[in-house]
Image (cartoon, rainbow, N blue to C red):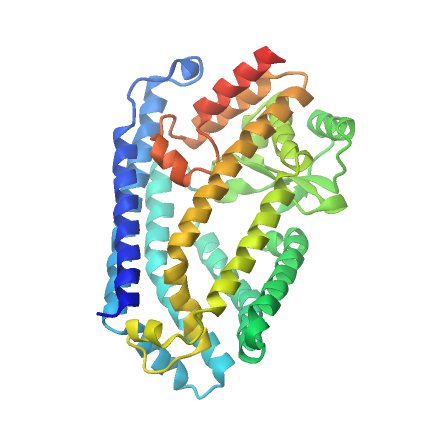
Length: 414
């Protein structure tokens, strides 16, 4: 049996059973007893609802992962990739055009299967727990806009990558890396102005106590911002969120309208202080730099497997090609990707603790961040007792109870 095929099937199945095991132990770690920290803000009915939400979403995720694993293995074994390749070659395009068609067909298959799960998650599960505000019209428009962006942005980027590998020789991975990094940085600057407004409405925060308080805090911390905006997150969900977008003097503060509605001014400033801490402590730059280096490593390793005949035989391909090499390499890279994801999550959780400490020190009301975290947990029906293994492998943020415990400890030490 082809060694590449054995490895790829092993990666898929081991990954699937690992995710399944983690989901099961995470469900078993649900504690029906309300943590003491939340007794003052979480009633028993709401807490039971949050645990039911975790059970429902986890079970749904397990069904989705099972379906994905079965379909992926079946598609590989029946020679599905070769069939798609023959279909793409039938258009009579050159290697770049054929590569774009090949990728588009595969993405269409993936998106079609994923859409059924997305529809159920949005209109059944999220609606059942009172989160969903998305109408069918918004759902369809979001889907159409996403496809257009994939064609307009993703198509040219993929075409350039294919072209670089066609003509670049042994240094093609370096050219691709530099080109993709350039495109990625350009998108970071353009997204707040051109891309994000396609999906949401951004409105300058009205004059008043909140804007004045936020502006004064930013000025006190010597943090330059382009503007303060609210986003109509309530069009799709009742969940709360806030974020920064842009770089340098183009930075914008964005609050979900649901956050402005649910949290007090002090709590909103505490959330802002936490996000500002990420910038002040260079977390954004550090993670971006690490992502860029990871991308360079990916392209270099990819270059070693371009047109590997053994790899193509594993997928029952009649023809070798650069574009199919990208797809097949993804299966080989999966274990490395998972390992890097775990490492990134470790640093991300550490950064969250550091940003919490920054918010604690830079605001005059340290209890406000704890109060905001509690309110976010209650409103978003967060799992308060996730299993440590699930946290280690999948959480980019520490569990809420750990953050609150650390905040109280740091407060006493200040």
